[in-house]
Length: 169
Image 1 (tube, one colour):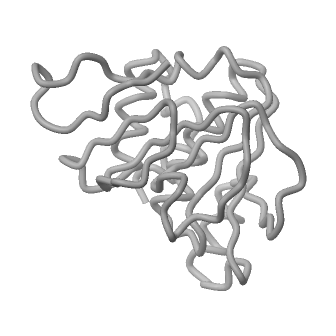
Image 2 (cartoon, helix red, strand yellow):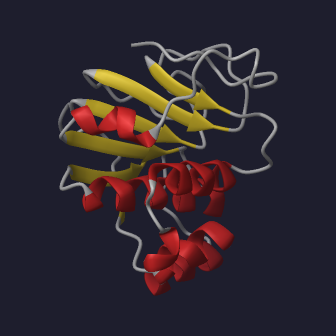
């Protein structure tokens, strides 16, 4: 199932990907871009909370040469209880790999294998190899897109105070 990217007005786009579209998968890996920033981590955390609330087996990961070292990011992860894991090499191949604030195939994200790919981002990419994707370049952050998608799915991110804080951060 291929969802067209959300570039241009809503009348130019035939369909938006919804988070519910991804619920057909049970084994899910959510990947932030390498050397993630707060936007990528908060976005991945939002998807993670949504999937966990639907009983999915899900992990939130990032990769790259080094693990996270920035003090402000380490504090964010610790204080908000974000279960992000450093995965230098792929440990297994999930049914679905969702990239948050990045697109599979771009230079800033390690190439992990999966049965199906999905991407949610606010950067336009010509290297998108994802089968499911939601690209909204009119948004300044991916976490804003995730907040809207969560609201549209009926998931109240304010019911998870740490998630609401992460998305705001």
